[in-house]
Image 1 (cartoon, one colour):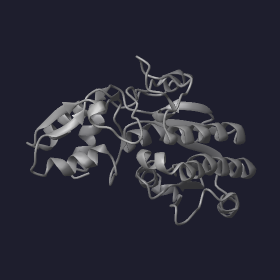
Image 2: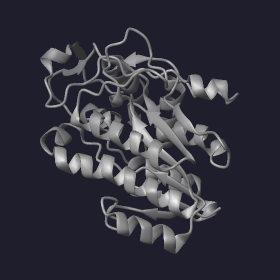
Image 3: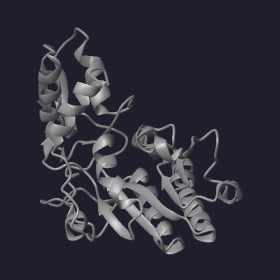
Image 4: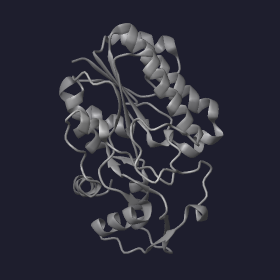
Length: 281
């Protein structure tokens, strides 16, 4: 199967490129393809004639997005629209990756695929606009939402903690009033591979099972790596950022279950596997 991966140099794109190496996917970074340019997107699909496009390309630096709204929408919204339109024209199936940030983050339970979005950041609003474009422009699509993602090479919270854990210094303050599903790129790849030639369309959540706060996640990571630097909890209010973080990033995986697919890996199992395979990230 001929495959194109956009955002192929990013964290998720690298993992998917590695998993699909036998199919020799065309992996494109931002230097190879400007997804904000519709003609470039069309030309790339016309040249490679893929049966499948995995659209990982995104502007994911949420704080930077707050100050660069136009750039965020050009990549996350217009870019998704251009890829979706090109896929529709050339008969390619599209798998587009999105985020928990499309939700407000204030529900007392995990978010379902059919819950009403309510993005509160530029990043979330731009990704939501990208989702809408995919749905409108490419009938053969699957939108995969992930959350609290980490993978080989980073960047991610896990990589930041791995770096700080090896350094001497005062206790690290880590937020303990935000909750989510830490998710490895390998866990996403595990769930995604059986779906690549399937006919499911719509939205699927693919975050790991189980839930934890950032503080508790840091404690688990430090225990795994044997770090002795102290970690203490703090509140979101004590650690202000330009982009407000969702208090609740948990995603329910109802669509996977309805399709009879296996459950996602537990977050602890995924983290343990990651540290075993990539002890330094």
